[in-house]
Length: 232
View 1 (cartoon, one colour):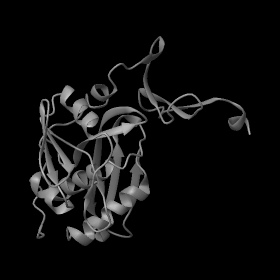
View 2 (view 1 turned 60 degrees about the horizontal axis):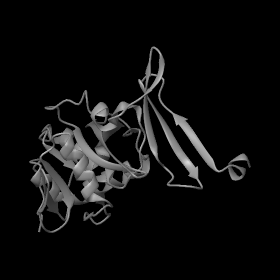
View 3 (view 1 turned 180 degrees about the vertical axis):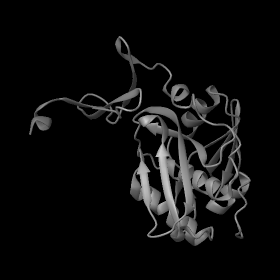
């Protein structure tokens, strides 16, 4: 009832085991909703994080399998986040553990991988995490989930110059997400040189080259993750 009476509703979120806290607008009569502000808990209290993407990627491993960087959008702000995945053989009922991501989105991507990349996900435990203690629900995270999962299975790291963004469809196709130029601009500012996005042709943005792919299998091949499927 109170939410209907007021003009603005803000939600303060965060994991007490992580230094970052998020301030999210879930209602705003005068502007965009789902805006995200990032703060760090310091000795003197909460301090605004001026460059959230750089802070969230500060501890990213550059040569570890199971990690992918996604150029996401939260509200009107582009933000780079790391998706981590660990897929291992299950010795019982397969477990699905997801932190910081929509578990339904992760389950959808796993199903696409089993059907279209011929990976026997049903025999594996799958763990997913969005690092830094933040939570996002951007369709562009789909491609990051797929790349991190396949990287974990193959034991092959995604090259550190790559950033990805795209929605995964149930037939194995990749779909464009909004504000690709803004996403890639944010990636370029942090030194990324190559972007993987849905599309039939490559695109050139200032400081970063975007490679277009139309299927999940093509995306895996572009990143050197070697799926055993025909991409035609």
